Length: 172
Image (cartoon, rainbow, N blue to C red; front, top):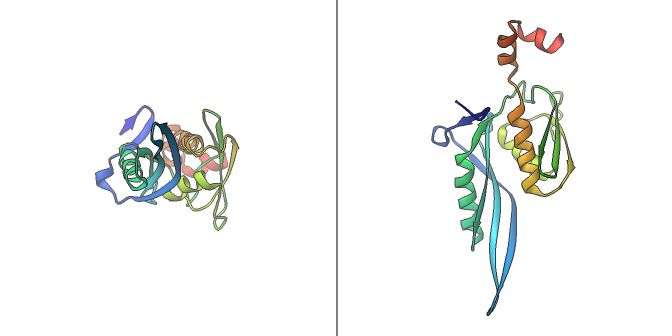
């Protein structure tokens, strides 16, 4: 299933774990004082290459998280994973957030900051080197990470497209 050049997945088919990336409290000043509401950005993933993010806003934290989880389940994408890492280096951009994602050797672990780490661990990537450049706003970092992951190409698909074996794709 391709939707806008992104591999989309149905949420009902898989078991998803959710992770709250950030909760933001906003205040609206009214006649009687301040009225608080909350915005939560949530990442869901199955730990096997499927991941999604969502934003939920409500007057209670738990309601905002629940809305974020529902939103995240609506836009899931399939991420290519090759030997527990990403197949090739990629840069992602959203607004002021820039991220760089590079493959790493086995045993390296997830070297990434908070918002990016949540996305990569939810996707099931175990060894990766990342750098967040530009904005540190978790919304922009999560969306830039999704931009980078959605631009990744599966090595098996590249090998079939070129008509060569998998070793030739990586070793030239």
